[in-house]
Length: 518
Image (cartoon, rainbow, N blue to C red):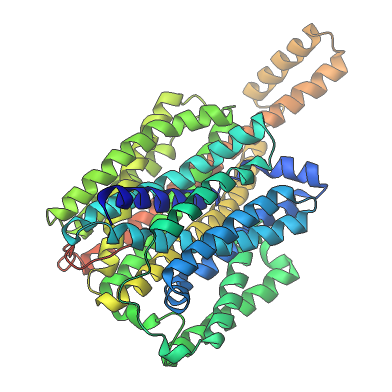
């Protein structure tokens, strides 16, 4: 393959991966529009997000197995076709449950657009340039979740919600055509146990991960264990996942080879990847909500907040790849990334309603640098001690941990912030009494303001009390978000010492490492 075709194929698979990652978050800001248009409740409409996440987390650990059974070229192109077709059907849906169904299938198709795309990119680079390839692919990891909500908001505001799905169609068709002519099958295809398929493992994984993901996505909305189905799914997830682990450890040809977790580097990297995924997805969830709900930013203005950090991250990702090539230990770079992320969350945890957009944007640059220093080295560290034949499976497990980290993180933040909001509100209301001179003065001023607007004294006093309540809600919400940032920073600080167990052996082995950032 000549250099032009190689570059075209690299652009194609990276674009496909970014497209898939954008779809993990692009619908978040369009739920209200979907709910009104399809005549469904907001709770039912949230399954549009949940179904996609469930399918994604189920399929990612099986990508190595499916690539081996079907052949990479067939599996990858078939996955893009499924993704594009389901994107079109999502836009055409006139019923919420039809939309949820096709979103689930879209998530299954999207699984290959992550790990397999990465493997293709690494093949196009010589072995001594693997770290650079990893950094290049890492751009998609960062860009996808970051621009998803902003892009979704822009499309929904200026067009209509189906277009957040239709936008995938031309990109996907172009990717299909390009891959049909350019994508070779995987080299050194390993036989799959004489055609034996681990159906028991597939079923247990699907039930276990599907149940767990549903609990995480819907727990806070339905008040956790007060909902009967959450209890049933929690028990189901626990039983199925324990059975899955026991089965896979003894199966002759497992769908997910858990034995690779004997590698200390992979085991610790998987934990750190889980935490980094938690930080990546929760902060990109919290920050736009804070900016739009409390500071009154539009989706476009929110996107501008994120833009400088995104640009800095792209540069930092390339530099990170160069550092790995020069022999800097991945664990050392990861440690710096963790410290930057802890600093970001500490600073965000001390914001106020008067914090300027420039200050937030500067803090987001720190976040972007932290993520850039985590993405590539963690992937390199994860597979640094694996045999070549085990690298695809180790990569898939590491990818799944990132996605699960995001799911756990958003679930934790939703629950934690909701409960902290109530706590702060209760504390504030305890101090809002007629004998408090500050409260009395505020009510008098509000009452006078509303009287000047033509309201009667009774109505003016009622509106004054309501204005006080609105201020309390806003302030308690702010404090709950600040608490959430501090909690995320604490989780990073707690897990940082794990790097001590791999720091001595964490040198980048770029000579034989093929990694995936998904």
